[in-house]
Image (cartoon, rainbow, N blue to C red; front, side):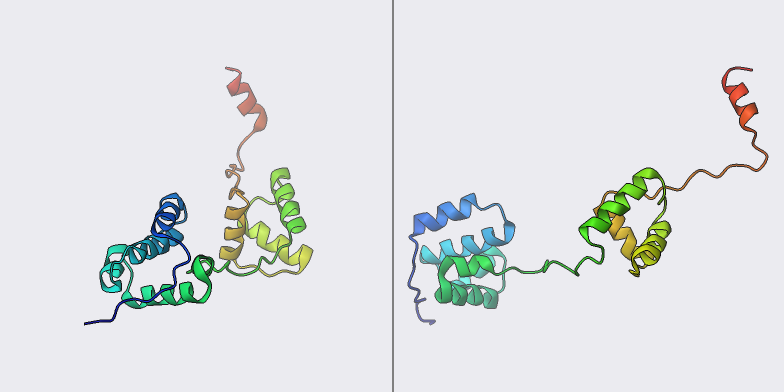
Length: 161
C-alpha cells in the first residue's frame, strides 16, 4: 500500500475549489482541479485519471506546489512558448499595412519582395503568408483582363447601349 500524501497546504479545500471554478484558462483549471481533489483527500492514483493527466505529470505539479505554492504551479506553461521573434518591427509592419491598403503590395510575393528590397529581410512565401494572416491582410490578385477588352465598349454596354 502506498504511503499517504504529505503536503503542507497553504490554501484550504474551499479556496482551491473556488479558484478552480473561477479559472478561465484550461491548463490552469486542470491543475487547480487536481490540487483541489488532492486537498480533499483523494489519492494521486485516483486523481490523475479523473483530471486526464499521467500520474507522473501530477507528481510534477505536486513538486511545483511544494516548491513555491500555487503561484509556482500556475506559472509553468505547457506549449506555446511564443514562437520565433518577428523579423519585421512594428513600424515595418505598419508600413506593410499602409502599402497594402494603398494597393502597392497586392500579393504575398509582393510582400516577400518588398521585405527583401526595402529592409533586407528574407521571407519565404509561407513566412510572409503568416505575416499577412496576423496583420489581417488579404491575398489580393487583380482579375485578369483580356487584351481585346475595350473600356469604351464596356462603359457603353453598362449604360445599356
